[in-house]
Length: 354
Image (cartoon, rainbow, N blue to C red; front, side, top):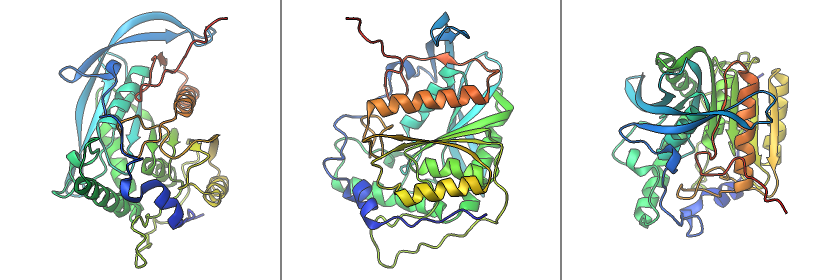
């Protein structure tokens, strides 16, 4: 069964992305959380192991050294600059690819890879965009004080790069598969076990992994697009919605899909949700769909990242849901308790006793 193409309404696109209004402008500059900061490409982090039957409470404590290496991925004549985060000296662990939002790989995505490494996996911040003078790595997360001209450059470059991949799912799948193959060559990475997570556009990426039968056992989407169709951000009446469809074929039926969605997400209308469920059911894919009440698009992006609509409760719940998803998928690998995620959200708050 071919994936359903959903063309989003102009209203939904404007609500999320139009003109980067002052209301959307970050109030702070983005900063890496203290527990994720690297010194010379490394950080020393506390490590807590939750023993079975302990109710999630840490039973032993130690420290772990997390390192981030460059992961250069050659694909179709271009070298993409991904990053791989891992615990030094730990046995090979499942690889988790981190697919960024519309803006492309930036510091937050590297920080998320480091967080995943602290929890027991090998995190890979995936670079999906070719750098050009008009839109390079330095343009992907404008600062709080960015000028209107800089924001226009960011917007134009980001959506051109994203739509270019959404129009060519075969190219996107090939690049993701090449990144996974490169990651598996790293000494920290398990040779067979892998998954992925993604934000916004990254949510479409994780579902393309399933549609393209990539060798992954678990994927998670955070406020992600459910169908791979280009977005007409400029509301251009002559916008080309054409997609070079991938060949029809069976899905990765062995892969578990988890969707973390905000109920107020305007780029995920009800018809898209219903079409997603039918598509997954028709192709015998195991899925979960968590809908967070009164929660908008961008709830998992921290302050300082463009297009954030950070919601602490939804970010906490969705992060813990992701970790449980991975724990069920790879039960033989210990999962380590980390106090805060990459957005700085406290994952295990303690209720004060009266």
